[in-house]
Length: 313
Image (cartoon, rainbow, N blue to C red; front, side, top):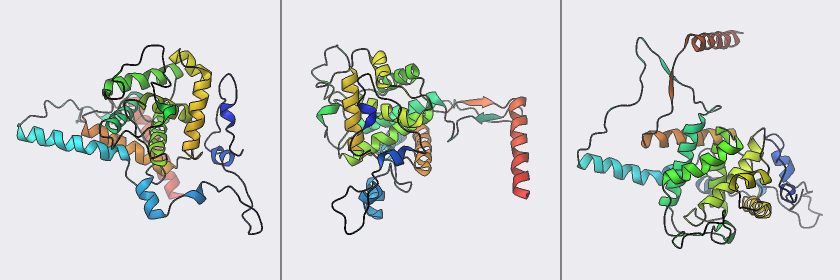
């Protein structure tokens, strides 16, 4: 496929990118690495850093590395706990449901089927902490909302200095996911791609670029991971004033900055899921609990019997 991204050349929007099983084969460049050949383009794996440095720098690639958003949130969590302790602030009444002898509550959110609303809340909270506790304001013009506005409304003069509230980020992402009917898995992969972009391109997500960076990550995640991917022209129906050409250009830059590495190992995906749950616990965001019904109990019993049977045989 070379350096041409076929998903961006259509004048009316880009078609669906390959699914999980095919994505790397389509983006990697097959070359003969024998000594008697001329210059060649490396595979993504050939460009990776040594293990020790890679683990430290690229949490979106390695399951052993800590996610960036969780570390950025810890400062606020510690300060909140310290303030509550000093001021003797009570955590308030417990709102979480607990199982008892009469009722058993279960969490339907799993790593393979996360709860959509709770996952989006956690992902947007992670983005909020990325912006709030950013190291600097390194950015690129392609993501600058002033130079590439998403609507015809005039961008405020202080657009690059005012940090967005969590509810504003949530509304923006929720609107896109609702209109495009995207899945919770897509939200997690969006966060993986976002942190990969910040690491690879050595930039920060800040007030001037957060909307376009998030939109670019959603664009890519929806095409790679969702069964019914949304074309770029469809996003133009959602955002109204953005052009297909702008969407294509942003997507092309996003892919180039990711070095066309759209692979998300299962171990990395699972790490992000559980770190998002930790973020939820730290910020009193609870995943919904539902009473265990008779029908669900029977299904669990059947599943348990099948597991025992396969274990014995």
